[in-house]
Image (tube, rainbow, N blue to C red; front, top):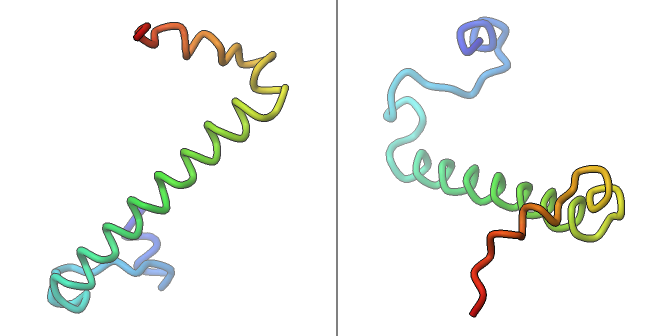
Length: 71
């Protein structure tokens, strides 16, 4: 899939870290991707499964919280 995107010019991938601008931009891009992904997972979990009634009823989300330890 990566080769197809690269041939079409849709990809921002590089063959080496040097081609992408060095270690700084490469690590910054990885951190930005990780934070964006975690934010989307949070939005999905919190709003879709906790706030909306659809997630509570249809997806039986309460079962996910059964294993929390009692303090």
